Image (cartoon, rainbow, N blue to C red; front, side):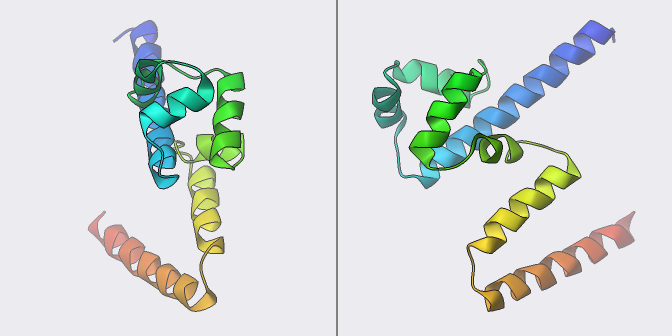
Amino acid sequence: MTTSTQNNNQHAELFKSIGKALAQKRESCNLTQEQLSVALSIGPEAISRMERGITMPTVQRLAELAEIYKCGIDELLIASSNRTSDQAELISQILQTLPEADRAMIVEVVQKIAARLKDRL
């Protein structure tokens, strides 16, 4: 496989990952693609293409999405990252929304799952 093909594959995976994160964020805000398209003054097909990873939103579009979703641009991008530090940040953001007892329970469950998966290696 050539370097160009590898880069294209990496870009395609990144686009899909960001698209999936955008769709999840839209759904968590209880918005339809149609409602979002009206808010952004673009067609619903454009929303669909972004969420399917066919097109990549511009930085300006990410800023508009972040404003609609009442989050930071970083949150939209972190949700799609496969870097350990970004995944840890995402988990931290999720945990911050929960009461202490629930956070402790989730940490315990994650530790047990990680230990079990580590034993499989």
